Image (tube, rainbow over all chains, first blue to last red; front, side):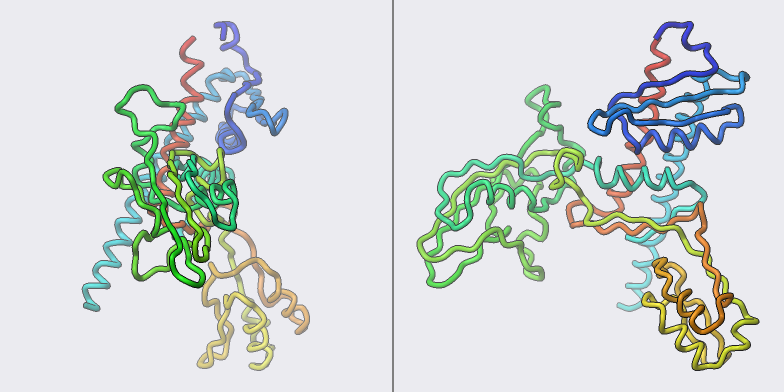
Length: 104
Length: 272
């Protein structure tokens, strides 16, 4: 990627080896960004693992920055989900143990 | 495992579900070397059935997939041998308990291996004189490659319903009508409280979005009795494992994998 391309306010990113799993989530996080005026993704062909992600911003940030921010948000959400899940599983197991002790 | 996911949207929930099914690595038999097969099932049929056997895959995280092999220290496969001859009159079952791990220290066994409380999985049936001798090699893979690597029986999610009952409509109904309404819902979401003589919501999560109760309410002439909407940011996940991995691990791994994938998408642009 050349350095000029990173200054655009509208860009289409072609992401290889990804499918709806990542693309739909990225699209959602991009839409949450108030500086993004349009965001959508498409798969040119289902047999080919390629996703085209189109981002258009209001001009206050570049398309590249918007995508980066969305990726970071996604990572934070995933990490938060992981810690919440671990806590919840640990609490549940503790409850089960105390219930078994009361029975036994 | 049943859990609730709150304050996120449907694309994150769907991403979690998709990764749980297709991208959590497990171990399954991938290569079968037949030595002798005089059973009624042919070689490839048996190889297919062996591949679908669930193997305990807690070691899958430490293993590498065959194309990732780089040096002798990498674990990519373990082997099982199966050597059964039928010597009794009548039908004999060849089951998952007959698979003998050639490297038991690797910690990979069929699910419920030699478990006296559970029935083993039948691979084939033989009569007197038939023999089956083979070596099966198990490798690491993901659901995207082949369905035998899928670690869950099902992974589904639904929107959490918000059920609002109208007390004014209930006041005009007879007890009999209320009971008919409660019984019309096959998932037992409602119950009739005989003390207050009102319909109450017993279990919101059980509601399956079949509209039986709404149809019944309309039939009884009270279309405003119950309003059911879907909470757009609150999901109920039901994940059923096959014994291959602990369900908590099946749910935890996708979260790590999605985080890594998002980081990977972000990284290349900065490597200008």
